[in-house]
Length: 327
Image (cartoon, rainbow, N blue to C red):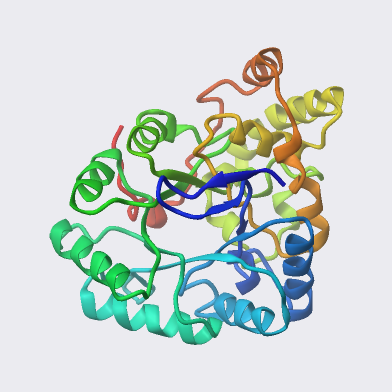
């Protein structure tokens, strides 16, 4: 596994991390033994960067990591997040008291005394950014966190936050069908020496090894709330994805590995965190950092999936209201 820096002043980690959200069941039923096997496989392949959050499975995902840490060897760089209160109603809290309490809960669940990276999961617009970054900088001084990050924010928020205290990482969705970060976020992070951490780089399974069929998803699967996986939007997307799958086969790669390699080629400061529940699916993309794509390869991918090709929004209305829009 190739290595990359987690921000200018951060640790060196594997170029690909593991998003642990699915351990909590958001994409369907999972179990502890399968999650532990997945983590074992990640470690054995040289992956050293794990991403989780307090709300994933209402703490279940962090508890899974805590169980695994007890029996695992090897150093892992860990990121977690806080800010979202599911409710109802769903709201955000970036206050000092809330962030501290949630961080302590996360540390307890994982059985560790600090995290390398702590994200504001969503920006609480009403609270002054100076107050929020003040809290985060004090947590760094106290040794509770190694650095702070921001999730689903705008380039403007990143620049303002970074001016108050250097930001380690920004996490937004980015993949072959979610290209918004190209309109300023990737460039801003590069200019400031901040790691850009794309989540859902395999399109929430749309570019997986097997062609996805939304009608076969678990009734509680989060993807069923997303327009891109519904009705005519999915029918039109599926036609383009089939073209992409044929291209991947002609290039000698499985679709997931090629999608991941494409993300990695968008900049040395990108560290994608695909999510999976199983060691088998992890095996589909874990070697993507070793794939070298030529200018001709990248042009061929762009010809099949040009920017803006996807039908439907990446979030349903409720989720779309939670992110900072900047274009």
